[in-house]
Image (cartoon, rainbow, N blue to C red):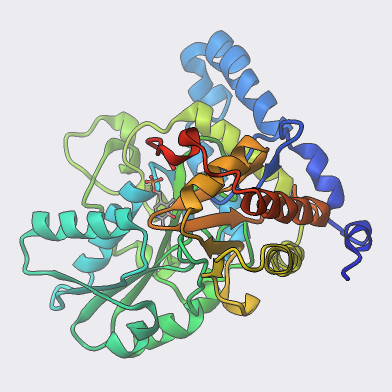
Length: 408
Ligand SMILES: *Cc1c(COP(=O)(O)O)cnc(C)c1O
């Protein structure tokens, strides 16, 4: 049997947990959906409200760095995803950033009409592509194929390959470098959604040669509910990007109040309007937990935690009809593990009632996220134990667990 205590004693990230405020008695396996509050973010948000908004009022734009925060926070995120300074900005939400990047990418391939994605992509990315295509009225088409068929579907009709690196349901991870290379071979641009990648493991946008990328601030980056998202444009492409949503915060001189739009030099042209300053400050502070941490150490622990979870669940819950829907090979898995179960929704509600918080994705997927900065091997083993109790005792079989809430 695995010596769980020994794994935790040897954990180089163990001290990081003290930087988080996780309620007593909770094992939090949903950081892939909403990262927890850090002490730093709590303090920073309080001070942004009281000391900056409260005391500085409008002067905060200059004196508290509100105006420059999107670029500064963007650079901090860039450092986690292999993007050089000046290539990432915090902005809007992921959906809007998909729209901005996809529209810019399509304009760079005017003679091509296909947006290629996969059927496992997160729905909002596909919805945004559909809406943009309808609005452009240019005869574009969204083509979705099975995730394993993307490479073969790349041909000279494809303008943009738009993929999410890690499948939100199964955790299956695409080969970002390989697919980007293949997209470029046929003359297509590559756009990646890093919603389940940024802060979870090493990402190398520069090394992969990605053209555009987007991602969330509130998942593994722990920015808080509704925290701003981010976007990346490869430096060599920035000068040719003409933002379809051309707002004043992306203007060369917003305070010249010029009636004509002239895009700012660099990544800043991808900003639109006034940023959510309080949220941005929370995200900025939340990023402090990554200071001095190698993403490789986070990845190594994520694999160790998820391998332990799979082994413990399969050992303790055998015979209950659980089916691993994540790849068994950690090399092609993100930082989550999903099991399908007929009563997945109710079982997850029973787990949550016992302090083990994961989530559920229709039709039958119980999803468990592993964020190495605040989880221990002991937590993971205990969570598997609670799942075994719930299934052994059919503790999920109660009316209040069988009724679905708005947010699952
Ligand atoms: C979480 C997630 C989103 C969320 O988009 P919002 O605009 O922040 O609601 C988008 N895309 C993917 C792939 C996601 O996982």
